[in-house]
Image (cartoon, rainbow, N blue to C red; front, side, top):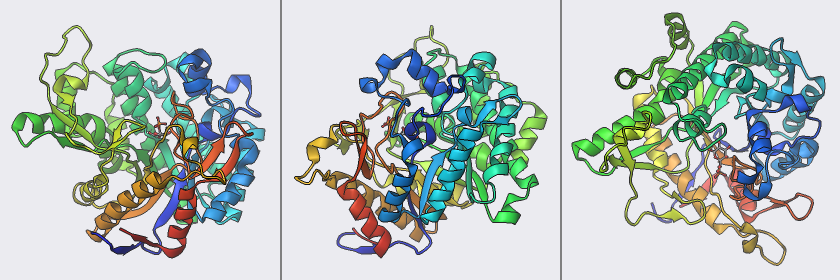
Length: 472
Ligand code: BGP
């Protein structure tokens, strides 16, 4: 595929993503409106890189007009963000709307539309209200599922006419994996049963919101769609030997199919349920709830894809004293000679796009999907500035082109992929890493009033969107 020009289909989405908590900042936020992330930040600021966190973020709350104008300048066709559940309501039980925040969301959505950028809105990007974690144990509670549906209903009522792309969650597996499997995030408690209950309740919440969306007829009335944004961990076995293949299959069940299957097929893989039973991971799932999941699958999925996961069978004995963790069955494996992102410690393997595309085509009924996040995090990016202070991020341009090339190949092979959303539009804070890894097309200058400055990659992306072709 050397020296070739590949064209990007006319209607293919070329956008960028972010989320509410990673950009907004706390302007106008009330003390009672902390999210899970805000709570974690307030209690553990020292673990956040250089102390940066959601408090100011990129100050999007005050600067969304400037940002929407920049999106237009770059030519983004779509922008994904979220609505901050913890801020949208003043009373989560009764669903009373915070009119000040709702007015901001209203105006922000209008601004995007006026600038010709389609908003894609996620209902939760880790913004679970802190009080629901403290009072009910967060997503472990079925009551929280009901409150989420109530919240979704209020959001749809306000913005359902204008927003055509809706998503229930961003990476619904991540919080509980970091908290309950790996115990590296607040409130740091290893508990695999809770992990699975959170997984199940989020799948149930997705299905219930899909059900509501259908009942309200949004699709028919406004031509809109609802889905979920997942981060399937595309897994490669070290070898074709049976023990490595088994390890990869089990990893895939726990970190790929656990959300992909209920969201798209409406049911869990039988082998995953058997493993749960074998290890006594009991979670509450009523037949009526499984039925709701079966009946209310998503219209499409957004997939966040950064790097491959490589596994091998365990070579060291499992410590029987620790509670069950899926790593009972595998160890991670580093491919010799692999290409690395030297900053983020993630392998760079663009062909992952084609492999993903083929799985969607062959295993998930060729449902519509798109890349909801992909990008390259770079530390100390200010070192790459030219005399005009523009970051010369040729590494990012190469990263995007390589990934897009394999994605387009997947489309040629018949996969129903409708777009590519780069992570991220601007640099932004992420959990714990804060502004350490810079991902944006647009730099946020923390030393100069959070000024926005387009990087070289932003001009390159602009050309790509204009010409709709990419040289590979
Ligand atoms: C994704 C999340 C994003 C963002 C990104 C980069 O998994 O959906 O919210 O945080 O990862 O993360 P990091 O800055 O840790 O490299």
